[in-house]
Image (cartoon, rainbow, N blue to C red; front, side, top):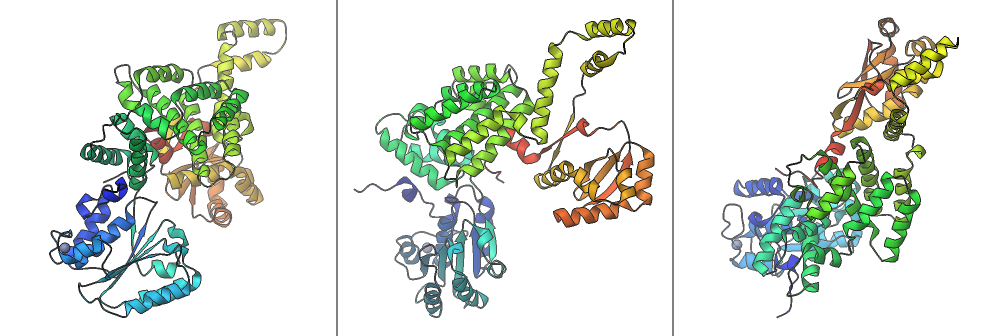
Length: 541
Ligand SMILES: [Zn+2]
């Protein structure tokens, strides 16, 4: 018997077998049960998340002779014909290779004829964003007034390329990336059924590499199982097959980053390239490594580390050791730089250059001028300060200097600075609000520079904090300045500047308070926080 790839064999054949898209399945089943079926659907989402599988189940159910509870029976002639791809009622078109006006005309021809048996003709157009402009126009005509017996299901990975005229005629469903837990759970079920002997850790690794795509996870498992046929599939086996890097390399790389040893970082990359390692995968794995360090840093002594970080006890110990040499802010910055990098990698041609630049950014924060790296530089300075003789010694030195008739001068300055620095308060904001704030905060001096003369002087030494979505508070050193801003109608002017330069509607108020400093509060985006804590691929209901 010919071998059937796992992802074909395990393709869901009813709605209840679909994993990880419960919100979509529920809605579609309800539509079928209550007989309120639409005529145009748009399924959006990354590859391998179940768009075409669900489209086919939907096509089967609406044509099924004995649907059960919104699911196809799988046994009637219609169900069987559709499952075998032999039914004329389901027309699948791959728009990637059939994207011209003529192809859509062909669809329109077929739309004219009602189905000979069954109730609906279902047109599934995959990768619909690939249609040419002319083809979209032709399709639009059909979507405007489809016959009763026609259902269109358009599927796309790039919804931003779909014309608004098409969007407005479809019911839109956003397919989520499937969580690691869901994928790993499914892999376990399937491995047991197929008699594949596999470690949980191995399956979880496969699930993680699949990056939210169930289809990819099954292909990867297939690959691993074929390679280690008749053997137990272990974590190490999987690493081996998937060309992954063992944690030892990351331990070395992480140490080098923490030591700011740029040369060693670049050397490690060079070695990995020489060994033929896949750099995109390496970045993802290194990101996970850092995430694990962060988790371990926050774990208590009694936590079972190896469960939390999915690695052997020995490796977890190494991480615990490493976690002690780096503070949380710095780790968060590392993670941010790497997640940015990971996003860029997928479509980049010069992957190695990108990786090297990121490592330089990590090891030389002085080259960056954003808030994160400033904070890290500040932390480094503070550390150096603490290595300078204690405050008492400095005070004595200052007194001695004063006695000699000099001013207290720099020594007194250092003494004051070394008095315990206040921990900044950390506030989490929704991603959009965070981006907005970050941009405006960073460029606030420019905004102030554009204000008229008297407003500009009232804004001296000011900064902004968010209050609620679309509202920010300007903090000025004293109450008089705040009153002045009010009198000068400054808020309207600033809102106008922001609207023009950033296309954002923000309302401002002002508060005079000399004791509040910008550095008292650190803002983090909820996404970063999530990424740092848990790395869920997506949340599920
Ligand atoms: Zn049926």
